[in-house]
Image (cartoon, rainbow, N blue to C red; front, side, top):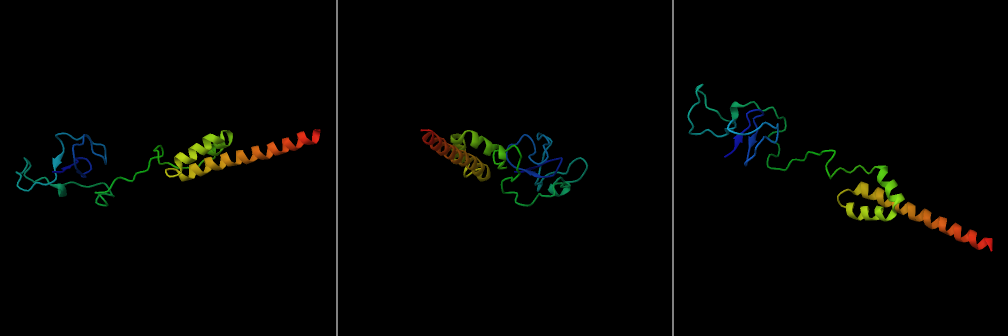
Length: 139
């Protein structure tokens, strides 16, 4: 049987200690949403889910689906910032490893890490060629 939050009026399922929508603590204060066959309260009215004002504008839309709230500090945050490219440039092996780890979860950041690593490898190879040519020309 579902309870109804006394603050926001959303249906609450399971054994929760607080409302996932508004954070109101749930205890003896939450009321059943279905009152068929229940006795009237002391004020003389039956309590049911229609007697609460629902202030959540998104309630009723996909209640059986998971929450899709994105938090900026969650692990799925994918900015692809230049800092990861600089890290990949300075430590190319780390850039390649981070690419392999993040290629499915954080594709933008993974691509930036790989680009930094590849640029570092190419520049290192070109500088190595110049150094080899300069050492051969010195003889």
